[in-house]
Image 1 (cartoon, rainbow, N blue to C red):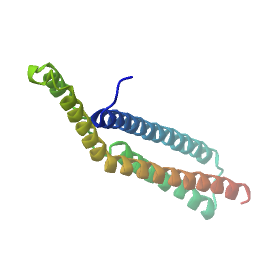
Image 2 (cartoon, rainbow, N blue to C red; image 1 turned 180 degrees about the vertical axis):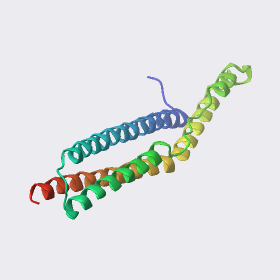
Image 3 (cartoon, one colour; image 1 turned 30 degrees about the horizontal axis):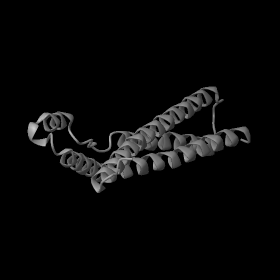
Image 4 (cartoon, rainbow, N blue to C red; image 1 turned 60 degrees about the vertical axis):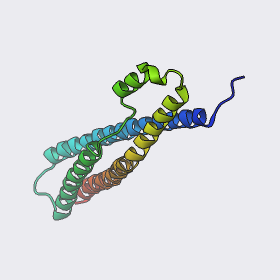
Length: 163
């Protein structure tokens, strides 16, 4: 059984965590896409509802319809911010890694290369931490506003039924 050095352990953990971080970024983007689809579906339903309304409508129905529209715009702004947030760092740069791996001076020192790769992965993890946190927070806020959008829509429908 091959004995692992501290560098081997650091290397494996750094690669694993960077891989997990990339999956988290992809998951946040998926969440943003789902929220976008839901909010657009809700606003399309609101549009159909408004078209079918018989005039005149009460002020309460109008207020709820207006709040639904405002919350839609807020969701879109939050989603845009979440989707466009941050510049991601995924080091090590492959060209640099290729140059190091093909450089004869490192052939006898694979531990140095592993340590450098691990350090680059750790740098990427640290660089991506804040942008990822901000992306997720914006997506979560958009989800909260989406919930209020749904409540406003249902309230407008119920208000219309009882007016």
